[in-house]
Length: 109
Image 1 (tube, helix red, strand yellow):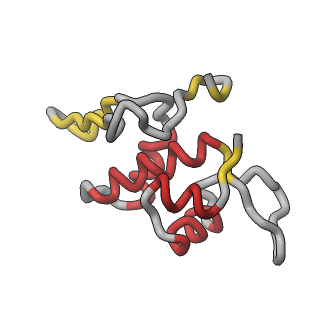
Image 2 (cartoon, rainbow, N blue to C red; image 1 turned 90 degrees about the horizontal axis):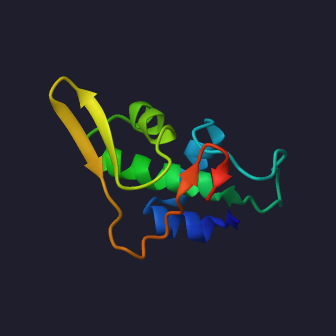
Image 3 (spheres, rainbow, N blue to C red; image 1 turned 135 degrees about the vertical axis):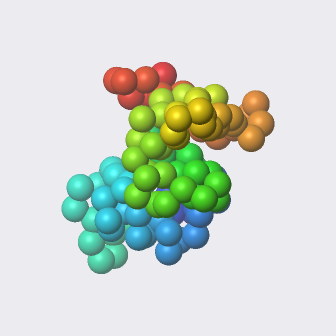
């Protein structure tokens, strides 16, 4: 399943500008490998989860590159991230009906 710009920005809680910046800079992957002018980009479910988690980490004060790096390793929520000695961050879904899919090493569950 892939997601449109509107779905990505709404569900991840990010602006179009953030989405475009993260995609342009390689933080998020798109389904189409050659998006160009006039081509509607779509993002895989993995990118939605990564954007959502990265946004939460950024809101918690973690710099964007580090937040994206930490979000890369998350496959399902809830998830605990060790940030430093004696400091662990627990990321949980906002609600049981969270739009985030559960991911496994091979892709979607």
